Image (cartoon, rainbow, N blue to C red; front, side):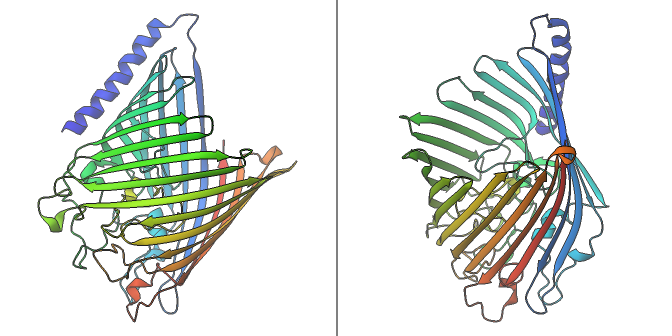
Length: 450
């Protein structure tokens, strides 16, 4: 009831201020309107080893966004997204293990989606500006380390209030109170506790399927951020996420520009602590059972002409799982690659090399990317330390993106490919292999942005 009341109040505020602004506008008021969107069609396929089932899906999705500045202090915006699938025969479960798709299921979640189309309204907000102070109320997207839109068909969106202090020169401060989340897996806004269990729940400390779906009690996320300079070449970014009754996550990331500015070094420390009983008084129904977990990572980056090189390192400590909700966005770890996540585990070490080249020609723009990561995981069947039975592996991926100019401006073509090599002994249990190692994966994406 409280969430419905909040949504109604936000909508009422938007309408009320819209009416006020129409009467309050003067010749000196700044009135601008921006709009745009994009349409993409994506074919995705995963090929598993031997007799294990392969998975595939073809989807199209669109985004339309609009924002109008009604006067010097008030803006109104909205965004709508849609998703269309052309058949789910390629999503049937494997007959040997009973496992369904992971990556293709992220594009179309058959437990949460019905029919052949889904529509959502991730953004409808009012934005107030008073000098260096900004307040956003309603449903909106924010790009933060742990909660971010993520480039999938439906964006992860927040419902609540967001305050930002943005002086022309000086530190950035942000505060957020989030009462509901809309995940890319459903497109529907849900209570915070409910949003934590929209996809696969993994295993609990005893190795049985986790039972926290629908049982996590949490009504609000409180977010605080400060970003400031220390000297001319050093920047520090600090975040804290308090998830009521579940957990608190503290993250700090200093970065420094080296030499002539073509070198950059950064580090990240993340500490997660359980709040109360982790979401439920019954341990078997709680979202997290470990008292704490930690992550440390480093990155060294070199920019040379149109090339970017990275050497990344990640370490999740051995005292407890680091559990970052996949329903809220990409994990922030430096060694992250597309189709790889290591959250949900403890005692993880990873080393990653990345290379990217972007170049701009007369008739088109190009982007070429490749990376490889070695993830040393805890034993796939060590349930207290490995939530999703992910074995140690070597993961390679690459992509090529082409964007023509001229009459075809706005069009883009991208081909993505990946292969993951098993680097562990999993015995004969194929549940630790399917979609987890010894598979190849590809995406072909055709997009148009306007």
